[in-house]
Image 1 (cartoon, rainbow, N blue to C red):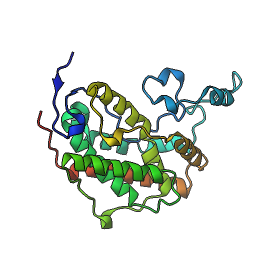
Image 2: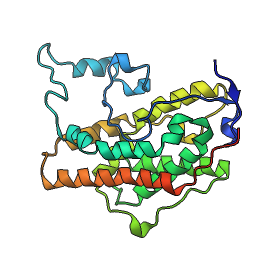
Image 3: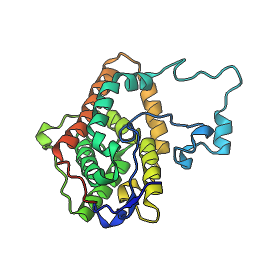
Length: 251
């Protein structure tokens, strides 16, 4: 059993037990939009289809085709942006290796990156608009509680990103974030987690984004644009990790 440690990253998460988490829990991993029953121990139960919905989605035996059998553009997008995804995850290695001492740093980096994403395009019609605003506000409050001032990426250096690429980055990260929230919650015991980790409804918007992506013909100009913009979006997280000083909390 691990020893309880006090983390001075902020009053919300003191007396939390340190733990080690695997990588690939932070950024968009494009996990299945409808996880199977065996996956319910690692994702929010609300992400699973209801009994009725699950029945409606079932196909006759022998006719089911997996994503690998008949990949759409979303599958190609995940494959094409894997190097950038992995590079961004590597930038957060200190947090993955020792989460609690680096939790405040992680929050500042997330604010820097998500605030930048919100400034990269006109999101009035984006499916992630409301969620992105909510997450950014929560991170702003968390960082203020810690006395931290997240770095800001200069607006004149930001790329212009297609709204669908931003939707993919923001909504596609939520299931991995839920895994992280659950594991941190187990470590925290009765202590409240930062507001950023509050569960939020995202599944309807994520499924719609999956449909939007899979309706795009791979190889067309728009598909190439979204791949390029998603790569740039992952780069913002890598930049955020570099701009915010890595200062482990005193334990």
